[in-house]
Amino acid sequence: MNFKPTTHSAFTLERKLDAPPALVFQAFSTKEGKQRWFVAHAAKEKIRSMDFRVGGEEKLAGEWPNGMVSEFTARYFDIKPDERIIYTYEMRLNGVKISTSLATIEFQPVGKGTKLVLTEQHAFIDGYEDNGSREEGTNGLLDQLVASFASKH
Image (cartoon, rainbow, N blue to C red; front, top):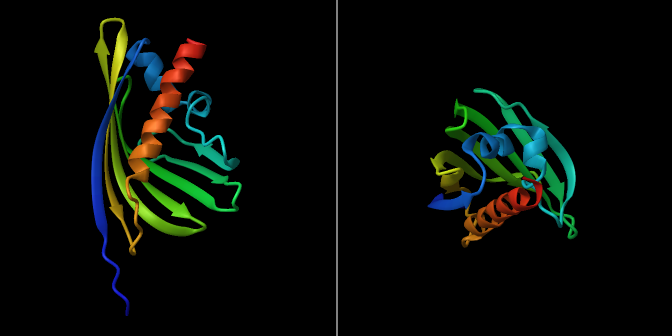
């Protein structure tokens, strides 16, 4: 038996958006809203489904130019409209689970806009080395979220 330790990481990211919490919440809670920003432009989308409710599941899978397939599968545990979403998610690369994570997103009103606070905690398994790529990727996704509001709203 070749023991491979589980490693952990966590981060909190913030963004300010010039839109009220209800509109920012919709960007996370509707398939149409999430398709505007929750994408990897270099990957060809293979699966996208969303059942946004407590106990519901979301899936996104894409194939990258090098042939690698990444899969995101989430389950929602707490939803307070326009205020908070708490979910867990698994990530797989080529069918192999690399991590399980807990994410909390808060939508705080600030004037006419929203302060979004996203906190994630991760367990990377079987020796997978993240080297900060999860935080980097999530930062990029949040930048795409902000850009989607700049161009759409």
